Image 1 (cartoon, helix red, strand yellow):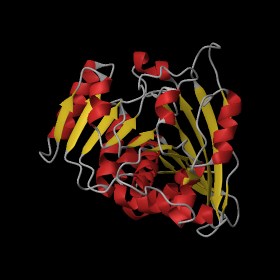
Image 2: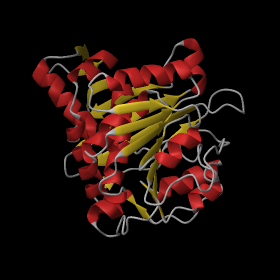
Image 3: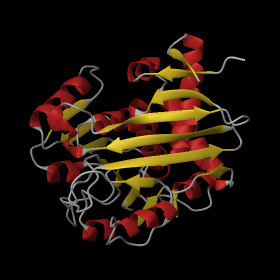
Length: 327
């Protein structure tokens, strides 16, 4: 019997264009399954190539969701200096296996999936932590994650009508604004000072590089009462005192949070209120008043990738997309 796997390139995955609403629902269901004890997922295994001061990382991220039989591993890198060489910050591959036999059935580029599933996790957090009727979305970091988050946050908060954005690269910020404004549904404004974004936002997403030594740009008093923040770049953008102003700080996985703390991240954080699975299952409550400042520090979990990859694989089979390779 011939054994083969389906290879999906970055263009293959992107052009399949799995809807963001489908991805959000899949990610939320994966957290629901995790809350039911139906997910096997060890903490990320990491190596850090480069000089000692570099913020490069490469992570191995396996997961198994028993209810769906989805199992696989992502090998993903983040190199902040890649932009200088015209290369993406995030790159890598995802291997999807057959749960019954263990045989690999697909290898796919993970860049598009990583961007969408990360934004989807923020959107799931927003369902439970953002204030109903939020209108202004702030984006600090106008790269791939910034763009993905606009789409995902709007999918769960349809009242968002204005986007305020900041990036250290002015040209990237202008391209971001130009692309978003093309549909005519959003008012998009680029700010020269990140403070002007933070103080006016109902929902804030920080999407810069993940840094061992946070630049801590966001200071106490900037995040308005009633705002929700999603820190996609760990605690890189927030001063510890600004985080301590939040009434509730959540994460996607406390064990992995502790793992990263031991590696040198999150050295001055307040106690965590909940994991995302606690909110999804109703074990703990999210927002309880319009005045609460809430924050999600989601680390990015393998269960998100493994929940989305089978959807991409099945869509590729239906579309006849990809390249079959012998095993």
